[in-house]
Length: 96
Length: 63
Length: 289
Image (tube, rainbow over all chains, first blue to last red; front, side):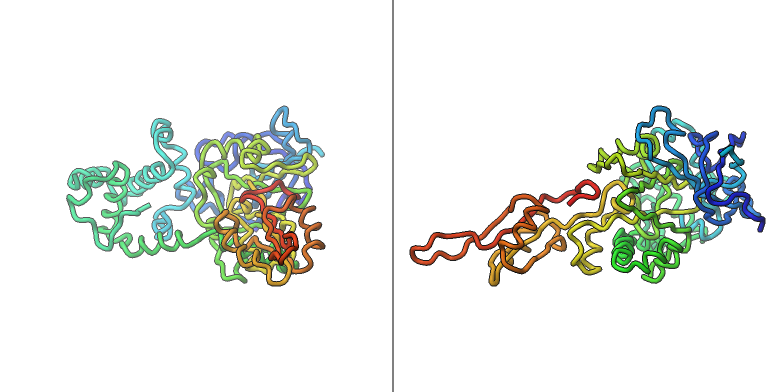
């Protein structure tokens, strides 16, 4: 399997890919900047599985953490965060 | 659903894709389990396991 | 699903009274059985298998983690392997344990559908699958927690985890104060489904008794606890001189709820001998008694 592109702690931004149909990257997180918390493993791509393909080769899946204030304007508890599992092809390096 | 997945008829992402594509009038009008029933029905028809006619005929025959 | 399937295919004409969707479900199931794709017994056994999964499995895991730091470390490193040590097979998904601390509280949601650690908690509650929870838990989680009766201090980080892919999350709630003397079985009874989702803390033991030898209140405690809807396993009996233990209990639980008196001897005034403290059933804010 390919090497994961991101290490824990890396700053990343969620890409806003023009995917139509099934995907597992929620709209609310597109374009937001966060940090890699951990690599969860390699899993088949759900966007291909959803249409009867085998989703291989498996894609790295990361738990990515975002400050809530980065996502919701006016979020008023400074230390709170939100973490999601995001597939590698939805992430790009962000400025630190 | 679990049995049909175990048989390899469809996987969880196909189920998710199908429920996400339910027409809004069905999605909004029905509860959680009803939506999944419609989803399974659509998948079974899509995969050629059952036909819409078979299901309607069975419903009509059972009154 | 398939709650109507009997041991044999449904005779035609037999399902006339049920609601539309139940008739549709029965029709589809009977067709699948006739085509040999599933059997009625397989459906029954699968329903039975899922209905037997309950939060008690998750509670056992949490109680073990509270009691055994080495187990907790294994659970945090590889939850699938750790729960298998307790006979729980969660191999269908990647299970991840999220440890709460006094400064960090986790809340789990699936905004996209209803992903939930079913292999260890059983079926999710209806509110978990509802749009209101799925949308508000990510955008206004503190308000959602408050609606569940859980208020976090501002300095506690609230981390919402959205189960968007192949991982399923189990919250390890904080071990409640007052539970130090409880064994693993008793600890497990304090771990609720909601505490393993993150909308509430684990239950704090509510009844503490200070009793002298032969105290009749100790004998009454279990019956009273049951009548007043206090969980029997939340009972802590502190043996020893009432006055010494009373001060400790007063500090933790407020004024005593019950007391009993020593038998009056001729001419002597009745005086309290034993006291019992209790609170109504329910949750308390994280970190507090």
